[in-house]
Amino acid sequence: MNQGFGNEAPSGHDHRPLQEAARYLVLIDAAGAAVARLFVADRRQIAEFDASTEEVASMTIGQSAIHGASGPEWDHALAGHTAAERAAAEVYVLSI
View: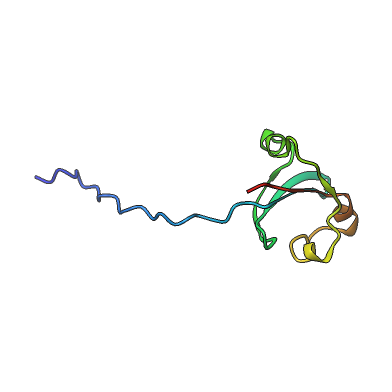
């Protein structure tokens, strides 16, 4: 009789990093709701969530924000936002 009870044995783990570490946290208004967006160093988005969560508060403790994300380096990353939303955005540079 098989001792696996019909279940396949799990495969080995892949030990590669899953994704790059987040480098930027952008708090921005999106059609009336504040969202937090995480970006890696090349400003590729890796996450988006509600800006009122406690995770945002813990990530920004002791950090000072750069006001506005209107520079050309943010054009592609924040293309879906208006100029006013981008001007009012708060950008935090996260330590790695």
